[in-house]
Image (cartoon, rainbow, N blue to C red):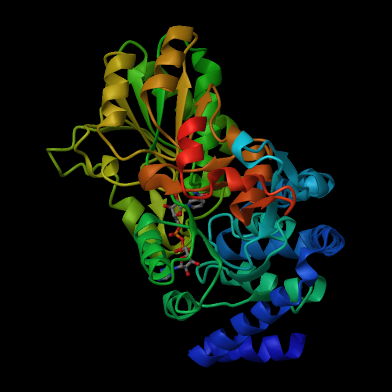
Amino acid sequence: TYETINIQTSQVNDHSTQSAQQIVTHLRHTFRSNKTRSLKWRRSQLNAMERLLRDHADTLTRAVRNDFDKPISETMLMEINLILEEIRFVRPRLAHWSARRMKPIHWLLQPATGWTVAEPKGVALVISPWNYPILLSLEPMVDAIAAGNCVCLKPSELSPATSQTLADLIPRYLDRDAFAVIQGGPHETSKLLDQSFDHIFYTGGGRVGSIVMAAAAKQLTPVTLELGGKSPVFVDRTANLDVAAKRIAWGRFINAGQTCVAPDYVLATSDIADDLAQRIARATKLFFGNNPQQSNSYARIINERHYDRLMSLMPRADDPSSAAHVVCGGTGDRSDRYIAPTVLTHVSASAPVMQEEIFGPILPVIEIADAASAIAFINARPRPLACYVFSRRRTVRRLFERETSSGALGFNLPLGHLISSRLPFGGVGASGMGSYHGYAGFLEFSHVKTVISKPAFPDTLALVYPAYDNIKRML
Ligand code: NAD
């Protein structure tokens, strides 16, 4: 019941392993009852999620604003709206995706029939991060529900207002026997990871990703890892520089740069690098005004630790080894966790800002000779979650498509692939494994079972029984 789950949840927050175990046992019991398999139940839960989002869009967007001043409209556009669209996309397709798919059978086995059927994996654990705390909690849940699973959600402790709101609302709308929200940080998460799940869906940084995968390996639990990385942008002189600058600025500075698929750095051919950097700086003025700290369209950094980390990436005037030039920004206000949209040029590949995913409002622009050098630069580093190319040359775009590997590739458009339920979303190599959204998400939370059936009579299998003299004659 709801009360029991609530009591258990608070016990888990008191670090009791027993309670995490009880919650998962309860979810497993529900799954074994087979209620989550029916399409009617799945649709009813998707409808309930839709109602939750409609009834409480206000509460939810305000919770995210409390956590890090994310603009309300940004949360509406990039979180609530995307989950609603995902629900509307998967709901009418459930029956088709869950239906049997007949498959032709080898002549040696005839007469026989074969088919595949997608069955729910069972009880899924969804571990979500703080940067899009509603979207990255509920969108995986939509796909898990579509596939007929129970879900235990563990939202991020770094966005406590949103996590609490989700913990309050989910049991009020969704089936309390099939869904539980457990709050907490690393300690609670590691207790949860000791439990047995049928799938673990993790979104966050790679360091914790490998902790999650190691825990899953102990029980041979399949995982989806939605990680991050340094997503590059290549721009050459054939691009429409004005549009490129605006789109890059939008992708980099939305959510104050705390977006997994944000352009992390720009590789611009030497002839346009400075011009492009100036245009990106102008675009930030257009978007956020002369003083972005006063703009109500610009978010804050999630906490002081990340603020300090980001400020340490700024070029220092007293450091002669740093030749980087600040085109705009470069400043911050710790008491407000505000960092100005920052564009840097003349950045060397060995600068601190080029060593790890920035995950904040800083954009280094690096000069590069040409597309081939940019591809070599990208391929010398871990495979990114996304790669973006602004070039009118078809051959250049094809070259990137063929010779670089990334979770996704965008021509003239950062972030766009994240917005369509028709496009699988996920990483490759260091940026993750598995994918979701739409049918990809349905499959991620399903086991596609093979079924084969052969009548007892006539027993044509006699053709392959030993002794093998017959077979020799046939082959
Ligand atoms: P985070 O700190 O919120 O951590 C993510 C989750 O891991 C949280 O639920 C947290 O409680 C849990 N966690 C933290 N430490 C843990 C530990 N030691 N053991 C077990 N669980 C632990 O988020 P984050 O990692 O700061 O997120 C930022 C990263 O996530 C960036 O690298 C970003 O690119 C990536 N990201 C990826 C996607 C994607 O869709 N691929 C989306 C958003 C963010």
